[in-house]
Structure formats: C-alpha cells, structure tokens
Amino acid sequence: MTSRFCIVFDCDGVLVNSEPYSCESLRQAIFKATGVDIPHEFPKDFYEVFGLSVYSCVEHYVKKGILPADTDIDRVSQKVNDCKDAIYQDLARGRLSTFPGLKTLLQEASVSNIALGVGSSGTLEKIEFNLREAGILSYFEREHIVSSTQVVKGKPAPDVYLEVLKRLKCPPEHSVIIEDACAGLLAAKNAGACAVGIATSLPREVLEPFADIVFHSFEEMSLSVLERIAKARHSSNIR
Image: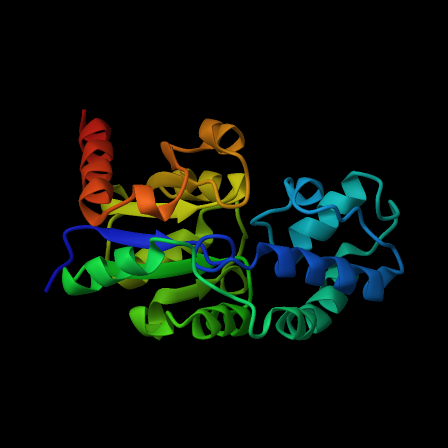
C-alpha cells in the first residue's frame, strides 16, 4: 500500500532520550584524541553542535578557538569517530528510553501504513543500538535508516534526509521531518520537507526560527495533526 505521507525522525533527542550520553561521549572522545576538554555543561554548552556530524563538531571547536587553529580536522575527526561509539555505548547501555507519546505515534503510523524513516548524524551502529535499547527498532525497516556517514554532506545539508526520502519513495513535499536541533531543522527545510521541531533538547524559542512548527512534546502530536501539517505545507508549495 502506498503511504499518503511519510514521517522521518532524527534519532538522538527525538526517538531516544540520548543527548546527554551523546554529548558526554563526544567530550570524552575529543579529549582522548586531542587532550583538550571542551566546555561540557549540558545542555547549554552543546546547543551549537546538536545534530552535527563529528567532523562538523571538530570544525566548530577549531573555529571557536577551543581546539588549536592548526588542528588537522580530518585526522582528529577520524580519531574521535574511532572511539566515540564505544564510549557512548558504555555510557548509554541500559539507560535509554523514548519520550512520552512517541510509541503511541509509532503505533498509529504502523497501523495506518504510514512510511517511517530515520536520518541521523550518528553511525548506523549507534542508530541501531539506540533503537534496539529503546525497544523501537521493529518500527523501522533497516533500509529506511540512514546515517550521515553514508552521504556526502552532513546536516544542515539535506543529503541524509534526501537519501531517506529516496528510499521511502516519498516526495519531500509529502513528508514531515521531526528534529530537536537547529542544524537538523535546516536540513529538513533544505530537503524541501516540512520541518517539525520538538523541544526535547533545546527551548522552543531556539527552534522556532528554523522550524515550520514546534511542539513541546510528542503528547501534543498525533498522526492526524502531522498529516494536516504535511498537507498544508504541500498546498502552500503549490501556490
């Protein structure tokens, strides 16, 4: 059955309550790779890197002067990537959960044959670990889960979401992308999709300039609400 619209989710901070562990694993991995302890008060010290790839995070810290100007970003990013997932899994194992209302939305979508996908800056290993630990992996087809490591450019470029939509065979104008980060919302808009913010990691007022609409929680959402948003966005694009 053809889906009348599709829903694509970011992973960390959207499908699973994992941002604290993701940020701490980034901190520890950067320290291991460089000897520099980045600012790490959660969440405020990570606002600008939520949703970014490891490469973009390292680049950000170089631009901010936190890492030396002569840092070899490619080399350091590779070293961070080499150890970050293992650190993350040690921190997060047995501690991950979904946000209130999410499983109800996933169940509604599954019963209604709505296509679901995931597009994340994390590795495939990390994404699947998160979904498995949170007990929601079964809602997603493996081929509809895409990592930024599989595309040319990470968020805020649209590449990861365009790849998910391609695999779902869903036009961007018929899709809703749910994000907790400004970079991810920009990626959704750059893909031509409806960018829905959820204020699980950042305050609503931080997300609003980047989103078509922002919800405080999944409990405010329903399948019918998301479908109306998708249809309204599609109609406005046609005009």
